[in-house]
Amino acid sequence: MNKKVKVNKNIKKEADEFKKFISRGSVVDMAIGVIIGGAFGKIVSSLVNDIIMPLVGVVLGGLDFSSLSIKVGDASIKYGSFIQSVVDFLIIALCIFTMLQILNGLKDKADKKLGHKKEEEKPKKDEQIVLLEEIRDLLKKQNKNYSKLIDICNNIVGELYE
Image 1 (spheres, one colour):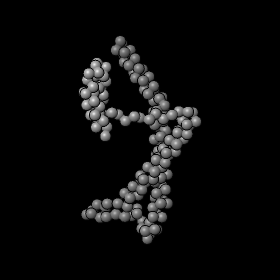
Image 2 (cartoon, helix red, strand yellow; image 1 turned 45 degrees about the horizontal axis):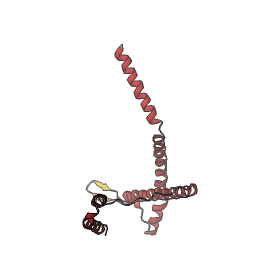
Image 3 (cartoon, one colour; image 1 turned 120 degrees about the horizontal axis):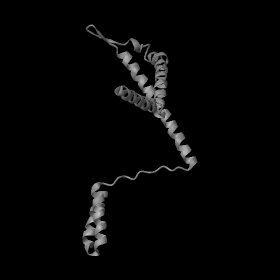
Image 4 (cartoon, helix red, strand yellow; image 1 turned 180 degrees about the vertical axis):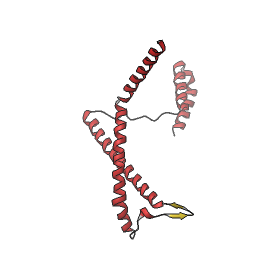
């Protein structure tokens, strides 16, 4: 009896965690993206197979890419289908790139209107430079008698920056 109650609590706990996980915005957004991506893939495949590749075939003298193949023994290598898949991929990649460019442009315009400034990342200093600068600064604090050593550190840091 006690084990049954414990198992039910564990199942309820797991179900609650699953509900939290599945109701997150990112999971739902991802699911929507997959569904839309699948539909978009069909549209692009149709565009390539039914419009672009026939036009390319006409330009190349009536060549039908879908029927291009090589016989090797009993196997048939359909490289025309592969060419169409590569064109599919390139069109999808171009569409995604264009969409991201547009979204980034809109985001930049919105940030500009709202007064948000881009944070420019400073290039990271090499570890050696950081250590030499720390040594130099410590020497400056301790005593000014180390001016020759400080000059050497400054020269080394200057050479590393070049």
